[in-house]
Length: 370
Image 1 (cartoon, rainbow, N blue to C red):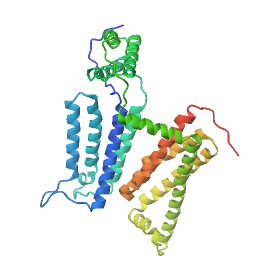
Image 2 (image 1 turned 90 degrees about the horizontal axis):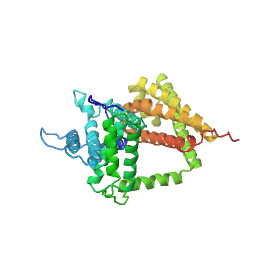
Image 3 (image 1 turned 180 degrees about the horizontal axis):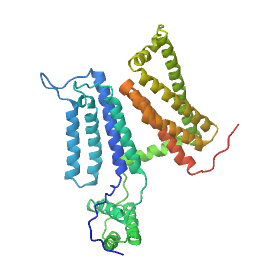
Image 4 (image 1 turned 60 degrees about the vertical axis):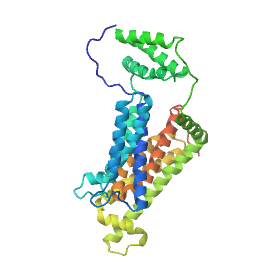
């Protein structure tokens, strides 16, 4: 056992960091969608008169400032929770006007703005998934989390479950720690937390935790393996059908344009996009067709209970669509494609839930059925 003399500035992941990032994602994405919907319904009103125009970017900056103040001034754990929500709202209001920031004409409807916003959320989602992934926890990490959890004793809010978690963490530090100071601190804290003087309150779950637990239990009860499989089959099949239809539109539009034939009414929008952005429109439908084919394969494998292959194909297709295809779609169709992106994300979460619940627990591939 050694005593550390040099400073250790290695970053330590905050406890429940993934939950705070998820709150940030949901609040910011929801803010953008609601802002766009509100502006569309109200005809894009302006706050101010004469030379003044109070853009909602300024309100976003105000929310961000409040979120920063919460973190800097309050040590309570609930301050981080509200900082994530308020900061997400502020970031959503701020980034929604990115078109104005990157154009000399202050063009709010600048086409690349939508894919830029979408790309930022995709990157943040990957950060969330990376943070959520279990990593090696050092004795120093355990002590950091323990000291944060001990604030519950100051708020008279420590329950038996939380005390057990703290005891387990401190025991790990004592057993695996190589730093004498850290081990000694863990021993002192363990003796303190086991003291009869510690006030233990009945286990109380927050209202949000209770609601989420009920939702999760209801979802798992409703979506049995067979029901979830059929949901994925229908969802992936729907994506495949849409992709085939889009490819048919592409060939039909291309033929009409090249032969200078009359464009049917139901192809006017597609013909306009093709005329304005022929390269991007063609790439979009071509890649979308590949994704649709992969989705068809995944649905087919699920249908014949080849779950491992189906899940691999589904994750490949949906991830490709979310990262690459939707970037082009957001450029061409702007935020009107948000519902489609949300549908694909929910389907991907369903695939990952299926893998976690029914494949990782059952590594043997199920046989095909005739």
